[in-house]
Length: 157
Image: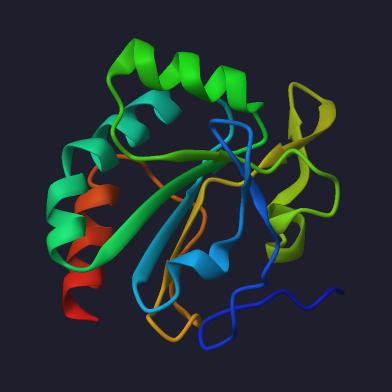
């Protein structure tokens, strides 16, 4: 069985694609806490709620010294439409590449629904400390109250 990074391990330095289509190197967040919240798909009910919750608390996360970054496999153009439609303030990034960050973390995995197997994202959140190491992991995530729980952990770090 594959060994995936967990609490205390360094976050793999795998670039994502920002909503504007540019490469996003996670090392640019060095020296700050980073909350990476991975979600399955833009504009679905649970994912919209999760993004709205994190966006509503963006100011409190910033005050705690934590940057936010929502990540899914959706392309940058879809992220832009999703953010504009719902007034999201938490930045979004795409992890569409095979062998990307969600693969390295083990949260892009085979799922099953109605007897059909498919690849999908396990809704997960990683709190990265100022040292670039994983401080806390929530996986799988239940959306209700989750953003507030992550904020409390970021404030306590």
